[in-house]
Each structure stands twice: as C-alpha cells, then as structure tokens.
Amino acid sequence: MRRLYHQPLSPFCRKVRLILAEKKVEVELVEEKFWERRMDFLRLNPAGKVPMLRIDGLILSDSAAICEYLEETHPTPQLMPRGAPERAEVRRLVAWFDDKFHHEVTVNLLYERVYKRLMKTGYPESAKIKAGAKNIKYHLDYIGWLMEGRRWLAGDELTIADFAAAAQLSSLDYIGDVDWARNEAMKDWYAKIKSRPAFRSILADLMPGFTPPAHYADLDF
Amino acid sequence: MRRLYHQPLSPFCRKVRLILAEKKVEVELVEEKFWERRMDFLRLNPAGKVPMLRIDGLILSDSAAICEYLEETHPTPQLMPRGAPERAEVRRLVAWFDDKFHHEVTVNLLYERVYKRLMKTGYPESAKIKAGAKNIKYHLDYIGWLMEGRRWLAGDELTIADFAAAAQLSSLDYIGDVDWARNEAMKDWYAKIKSRPAFRSILADLMPGFTPPAHYADLDF
Image 1 (cartoon, rainbow over the protein chains, first blue to last red):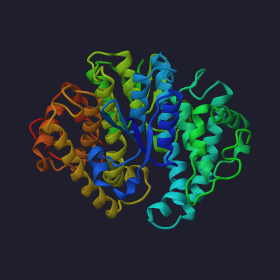
Image 2 (image 1 turned 90 degrees about the vertical axis):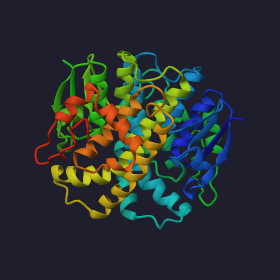
Image 3 (image 1 turned 30 degrees about the horizontal axis):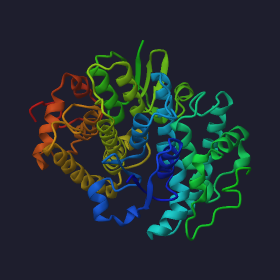
C-alpha cells in the first residue's frame, strides 16, 4: 500500500499531496510527529523530516525529489514542461518557494504560531512574526508580477511550481496570515489553483486546536 | 559568452563549477558580492543569490536547477542515473547536502568565520561554531556509512550528489573545519573525487585574507 507520512500543515507535505491528487495516485495518509524522532521512522528516513513516501517498494524523502519521481513515473497529467529552459524555470521557482519563501515567511509565521506549540519548544517570538508578516508582502507581489505575463507561475502551463507556491500559501492561509486583498493577479492565480479537485482533501483537513478563518475552504473567497 | 556569477567559497557555486568542469563546459567566472545587492544583478536574478549562470541566451539561478539543466543539455558524462528510483536517491542526497548539511554545518562554520567578516555583519558567534563542529561529525559518519555499501554516494555511479557533498566539504576544508581522520571510508571517497581534473580550478582558488591549511590542495592529504 502506498503511504505518505505527513503533517497536515506542512507545506512540503501539502505540495506532495497536491501532486499525488493531480496524478490520481491514491495514498494512505499517516500523520508523523517527526519532532518526536521515532526510531522506526528515522531508520527509514535519516533526515527525520516529512513528507516521506512509501511507493513502488521504495522509501522516498525530500519533497522536491518525490515530486520529480512522481512526474517521471506518472507522467499524466504533465506537470513539468519538456524543454530544458522551461524545466529550469520550474525548478527555480520550486526552490524559490521551498527555500526562500519558506525561510523568509513560513518559518517565521507557521513555525512560530503553530509548531512551537505542538513541539512544546517555547512561545512565538513577536520579532519573527513581524519579519514574516513583512516578508510575505514582497512574495505576494512577486507572484502577482509573474502572473501579469503568464497563465501560470512558470509559464503557460500548470506545473509543480504552482503547487509549491500554493502549498506554502495554503498553510499560511489556515492561520490567517495571507492578505488576499494585496494583489489581484496573485489572488486570481490562487483562486484558480484552489478550485482544482486536487485541493479538496487539503482544504478539508482540520488541525485540532487551530481553527482556520471562515474564508479558508471557500472557493469564492 | 557563458558566464558564471559566483563566490569562491560558496559551496553552491563550487557544485556548479564542478559539474561544468566534468562536462567540459567552459565559462567565464565573475565574482559577485551578492550581499551588496547590485541592482543590475537583482534585475536578472531577484533571489539575489549566487550562483547565477548565463548560458544559451538564458539566465539561470538556483544551483540544483542549474545542475539539472546542465545534465539535460550536456548529457556527457552522465551524472544522473536513468531509472526513476536511482534519480530520486540522487536528488534526496543533493537536498541532504544543499539543505540539511548546509544549514546544520556550513552556515554555522563558513558563514560565521568567513562571510560575516566579508559582509561586515558582525563577529563569529562561538555557540554557532560549536554547533557546526558538533554537527559535522554526524554528517561525516553518514558519508562513511553510505560508502560502506556503495562505490559513490548515490550508488555505483558518480553523480551530482557526490559533487553536492564534495562542494560543501571543500569549502569547509578551506577553513580547516574537516577532520579527515574521523572516518576512513569518507576520506577515501573524498580523495577519489578531489583527484578528478574538475577539482583543480577550485583547489587553486585563493580567498584574500583567508589562507587554507597546507593539506587543502594536496591530493594525498
């Protein structure tokens, strides 16, 4: 049985879940409290992170590696372009959201507000929350700027880059940290990706102790 | 003209330089002090990081995206396996070194000791240097453990994963932070990759104000 070890609000897990759902690859979801460093989990996955995917007799970790694997083994629908320059642009943007956006925004907001409480590692630091709230503005405008000349983030086609970005934003939207009024092109792009069937299971997930804002699961937000 | 904007001790730039050299793709090297946030550089590369590669009329950024592009456009010698499971293992390890090793080790040692001085952002923090010195042990042993059952890090063939790891280690070796006596299998692997012609230009690079230890450029260290 295919199985995804995940955390409901982890943007990296959400990215993999979105790609799996787009490609209609069914998996059993298993919630893994990775911070508890369970020995059986670490033995399979020494990085100790989620997502970890059991598939085709393999154990895969690292969300970018998992997405590329899924694209290579389940090429329909196609979520990576064919040309090398276009593929480089998708990967640049995936890294932008997985690395830059994540460290500048998500770590400062989601980890401070949610994971510190779950992991019992202290209280939110207001300086970090302020930094995250400031940094997200620039990223939302960057998405808007990209969308002024493109149908999807990396070009004319929907790609893994859109899911990498949408996964980060959906985790932050759950805690009310995305100002959708900031940029219309950005909001239109998110409305388009949020209304895909692949998004449904993610929007239905609830995290005990944390209630999302009313618009969170609303497709007409 | 192909041009790589880089920093001599950046492990991400070193990884790209090694892949370029293996594939015999000649580039002009341009040192970019990315922390000065030069406007002409930011316009081309809004992430503001090095490496940035000008090639085939394109501007590429993000070292992992650049390496995949080079593999797709210059497939000889082959540095990615053909099978999806093997490719996932290469990408898992690239992420291990680019992300986990870099944040747990390189940031704590190289950025504290070298980049803070270059960027004039303060003095090295001894707590961070201690953390980096502690963390590297576990990573060196992980390389040794992988090499007990494999010819190269990701399996039987030399891949991008070996260059991702060697790039991090070579930057740290320049500042004397790698204990080569710790693990023999790890040292044998590094000696093998360090003796490749692709490594020569990197070992010859000197950073004004920082002198590498005597063994640094020695192939028989």
